[in-house]
Image (cartoon, rainbow, N blue to C red):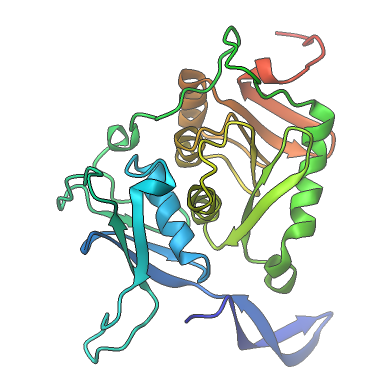
Length: 286
């Protein structure tokens, strides 16, 4: 199986001094996801948690929503011409009775480590129907999530402290789930933000924890439409990012009732949607 990191020789220049040294790099390898034996998607990922990644991907695609809908996930032996197992192909088998989506050439997906939407026929293709409704400002589903700005601002440091591979490579994104009180529930790293989120969601599905209606999702980079969609599809009510959201991510958050926070740095943040979950002071200006 591929390693999470690899070593490469580099030439280093520091203050005019040239030296050679080994450097630790994050590994990146393709993962083909098959569904009931048929190719569905290829993603460039950091090896590790491959089964969770595949399961989380299928949650975001609306195929899976609970552990009992998943029969098993296996690596495919004989994935190469010589019959060897590269550990870069997984086959997800659905439980009996679970609907299998139509897999066509148009629907087939190629995802890269920077953009999980590449190859989609249109944005409409990923506006799948969520299984769980996020609570709105006027709804009372029982125990709606509320989080203070002070708790939110403490999360990036907690995420950074939990990034083990980043410390060795400086080249990984991370995603983490927290409680509204700021307790770290799980953290995953990957060369792609969307993969890190899929690994989180897939692990939650395998553990029977979906929907994640009491969780806060924090991502280390920007908040794209795809990441907002993954949060909604997993029933996560709060998505926070240390960088900017896209306009389409804000539109989706508004439509779905998702709390979307960007530029979460130090004691500052921008709240783009779902402010009803935050105890905010009165806004100044217009």
